[in-house]
Every structure is written in C-alpha cells, then in structure tokens.
Image 1 (tube, rainbow, N blue to C red):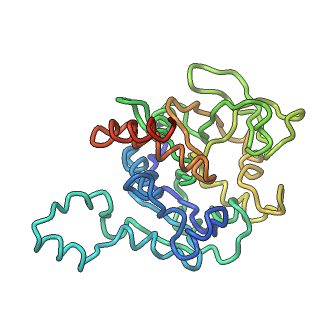
Image 2 (cartoon, rainbow, N blue to C red; image 1 turned 30 degrees about the vertical axis):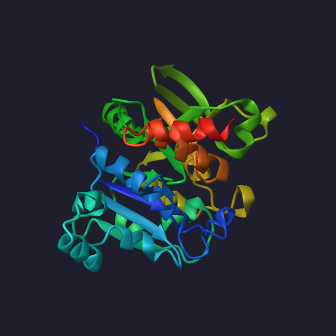
Image 3 (spheres, helix red, strand yellow; image 1 turned 120 degrees about the vertical axis):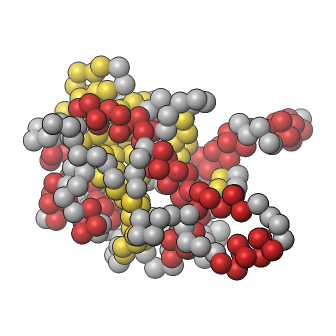
Length: 292
C-alpha cells in the first residue's frame, strides 16, 4: 500500500524572537522580511510546492499578525486596485478558506510541546513540520526541501527528517542522528541525540528543521517529560519511535540559512538578493563598494 499523503503542515511560531529585539517587540520574527518576503512566506511556499494543503500555525500572544498575513487586506487591495497597481504580488499570501488554522501554545515548554498543541488538527494523519527559522533554498532548477522529502516518503513511508552535515565542533547546538545504511540522499536513522557534546555525537549529520512524522508521535509527546534545556524535546519523542516504524533522513540538496541568528539572517538576505535578476547586479555593486 502507498503511504497516506502529506496534506498538513505544522509551523511552530510561538517564540518570542528575543535575539532580534527590539525589532521583534511588536513584529513577530517570522514576519521579518528576507528581501521582500517575510520568513514565514518562504516556509509556506515550500509547503505548497510539496503538495501540502493545510497550514497549522502554533502561535502565542502577540503573534496574530502571522495569520493576518495570509488573510485578505481589504483596504490595501482596494486602494491598490483603484490606483491601477498590480495585485499579483499578493497572490502568495492568499489561502483557501479553512486551510490556515491557528492554535495557541500558552506556555513555552519546548518544540515537542508546540507540536503536541496541534494534535487535534493533525488527527490520525501523517504530517510535516517546518521550523521557519531554517530557510531552505533549492538549487536553481531543483526542488525544495520538503518536496524532496515527500518524494522520499512516497518510496519508504514512515518518518523522515531533513539533515545536513556540519563540522563536529558545531554539533552541540543541534539534534544529531546516529546513521545506519545509506543510499543516495537517504540514510536510515538508528538513533537521535539532542545537542550532544562533540565527543559524544554519533555523527555530524544534524536535524535541519524539516520533518515528516506519523501521528503516533503525538501519543508519545502526551506523556513525555522534559529533556535538554528543561524543555519537552521533539527529538526525544522521535527517538522513542525508532525501531517501531521506518525512520530515515534525507540529506537536502540545496542551501540552508540559519535565520534564528542575526548573522544567518543577513547571510540569507544577501544570498537571495544576489540571486535575484531584478537586483542582483546592483546588490553586488553595492557590496563591492562597501568592501573597498
């Protein structure tokens, strides 16, 4: 039998964005623009490319602007229409009624808890998870990260995570896989460790912000205690499922930018601006001038 299709995606976006204060005092970090699109838009576009229909945002107080971004802005659109402005620039922000859902994470208890907050919407279906801080950019002419994962999922089913290789001195900041046999971009996952010391890390393959999980993970999270950092860790819940269901990692063929950090955010902005036909040459000239 073919595995159930991936129709739903969960976006945990309840964080306070303290590393970007004061910019994020009022504006959610996920709405900060990388060139001219907010960070959350890139993640939703990636989900849509992979055939995902329903977007579930796990929000917190002060984060309603994320949902409003995908609503109709009547006054803006009416004014633009009256002035003859092109409205197609807003096409990516439009959603089918009922396909954008928000649930609240009322207490910040970690990523695992945030995912668990979406359990009633996910139901008994497999689902994707996107961490919008991780901006995943496809190679020119290639597929996005989640589309690559869905294609792999259609072959092997079960649970999948996106991974990237990093230097060993960086593994203590991430979830790390214990790898089994590999075939091309696909690697069997035999274990998962959250933020291990470099000496204890089973590999340098880090979990990079994209997941396809079976609904049973919600039952594991239901009773899971706190792990690293005093939070309910999604990595711990996934580790308990290894051996009971197929579990694989997909090495993403593309670029990843850590937009949870200021340096990563600037890097992403420069990289995407330089790749744009409408501004790349000008941005390159500005950068060269500044570096003189």
